[in-house]
Length: 463
Picture 1 (tube, helix red, strand yellow):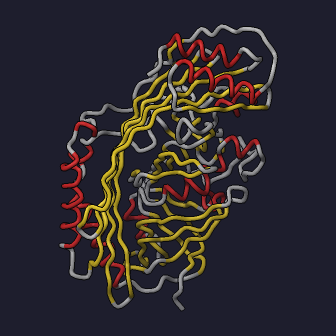
Picture 2 (cartoon, helix red, strand yellow):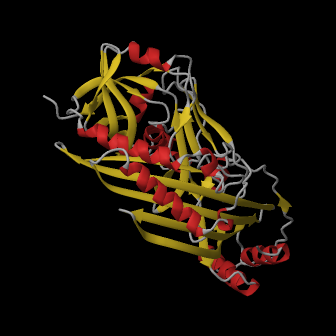
Picture 3 (cartoon, helix red, strand yellow):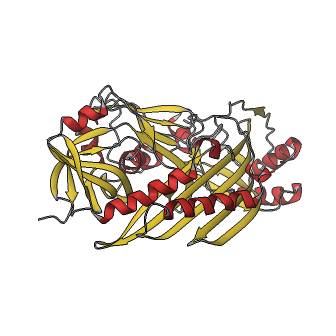
């Protein structure tokens, strides 16, 4: 993307005015998206974006500039602007000897999406529309979305790091609206992976669409959810977002440094049930958050955050790790070359336990079974959260019985971790997600086995 000699010159220019650390992050991103609503293609776009961000650090001050001009002159101008922002004046020259970072790709790509005709991508949308409507006449609306991206990056810094990565992602989603006596009900299915168009060798979009349609139809006969403190069983792959939002963000080192996390100062302490081991794993190909190197050029890692209930470590980017005199954990990520990196999760999940998931249901006399969680809100300082249940059922006498209408789960992340009393042996990752933090969105994955929280507040409307 950029000649190494040019990169060396740009880093030298960034350090010339006294910078202690300089970094070049260059990116070339292209992608396609297509959307179909009610049988009509409403969107079919392709785009490409190239540019570089230059970061210069002096003491506690960071200077940053970005440019879409990847010529040597354009990069040098950005470097000088970033250096000036970090510190004006100074002098001296530092020579950087760069060494290429060798990190294995988390998976291989067989079919680059850019090699596939747009007509083939639109055909997937039409198949999904037809399949979803075949589930019943009460399906009134169908939307389907296809998207792919290829992101090639180069990272070099004044500590000698020189790394590159080629990240290809493909996703598909279908949403349905059913209409009946209880009003409008929705169903959704989505899939995404760090792979090419071969995703659709393993994924049947017709089956996905029928599942989304059936989910909407099932909710037409749902009863109001109960309210109060109840045991909650979360289906495998359906509740990872809860651990991402309510626990994962509290384990990011920038929140720890600002002392706005309930997990600050608790390394070595029991913070969860001994049944819980929580991991963040960027090497987990082909999951949605997989990468070879992070956006600071450090190899992705498999980082155990909580081991058997004990807090073992936080997630680190370069800046926070530097202050603590330790290595980055490969969690420095950014939305694009126009943004500074910060601590971000990759694929975050709870490891499987030993229990048969069917037995977990049989051991629950009365409670709620959550088959799909929706969006939510979390206070990372306290861990308090509210999540919507988009598919849930009542558990009666150890059996899953009636479907429940949309309701909320209300709780506290650390309390949920402590109240997990059974963990199943049936781990699965959930659908692809985009994590938003300080205005930046990055792709992330999450997952967990079937597990039971002994008590959680269910915000239903049943009397």
